[in-house]
Length: 406
Image 1: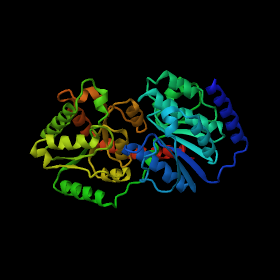
Image 2: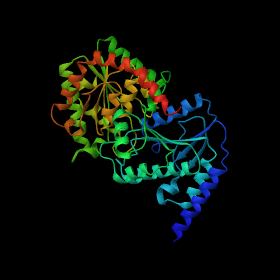
Image 3: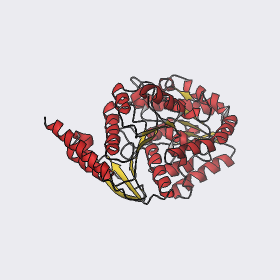
Image 4: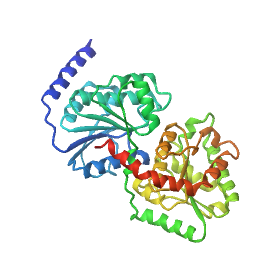
């Protein structure tokens, strides 16, 4: 009974906010995909904040997930509103306060990335959808942007997205996502590209310059420098996969690639510092597991670093083998060919933007003897044609990335 009373009062309150809303001019509210820790998520959030500021947005607010989230990597944030009480126990008090705060902004952007289809659990997705609905009910023009939708979405998430008010706009970040949204939701959706394509690289920092010097020295010695990322999420994707097996699979692949290309050098690029076994830990373990012959021409990028620094670091590489989609986006955004371990089918949609296919391998194949190296070699042999196709398509992809912020 109490919940019904709260729901009625909330509906009345939201309607009043909508009726008497007086948003601050040139303002926007942004909800990140997750708490800080993933370079990919940081790339998306940074891109949005920078692009909004360039549009003339003078006040940018941020919705946070936990009280202790550290958003210091962002500049220009006017206020941070924490929804921890809502995410933990769906507090009614925080819902009222959120709607009042959100109503003061002209626009609300939910950065959906890969958290809208229930892939990581429906509760996270449903709560994000509910926050978008709350803002819309309070009269705030709301967009869920830069997100993918897999081919097996959670049914509850599908229903929740279907039930969103008609004025909540959905922007799918690849052609496959757009098709799935239309088929599943029977409501309009718009095609964009990931806003991380708009991230500007930061080549001037000491960390980036140290990588540049190493890459330049390797290439001047007649060597090809290959970026390599091992994604810790693969440990959750493949049954009975241990960190040791994953490390050994990467180390074996690098040995086999070196046998084929004796002039190969490797830049190990962790792209996520979260988790009990992070990308950083995997990179360090791979570095220790390879032979001296490989290790003598192998470097781990300095961490922690910013996604704009990572994007700068990969600019001069000859090829990238990535387990992370946003590292792939960083490479593609610099015209560098990339092949991916596709732990979700969002990777195929990404490559459709560039009219490319065959550049993904499934996680379970990574630990099959010889498969990872064979996959890499097959695509590496096509690197010049791939680079040309990427450069040709990149301007159109960047234009699509701007659409959802317009």
